[in-house]
Length: 88
Image (cartoon, rainbow, N blue to C red):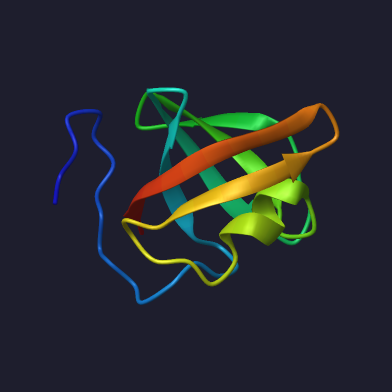
């Protein structure tokens, strides 16, 4: 599926290292890449992509999930829900 923002979903089986994730976060499409270490936000094809550590609360919550899954993230500033919309 090609998204209007230029990033493409190639549908791997589940979230793992190096995965590019399209997330519904508070009704907004957000892009993150699951990495060994977190880092700055980078721009890919004109879209901001946050580098998220697999050890972070978000990384831990998303590890092993599939497109369509919703998870609760237990963050230091409180809990919030995220839905996995796309996985590349």
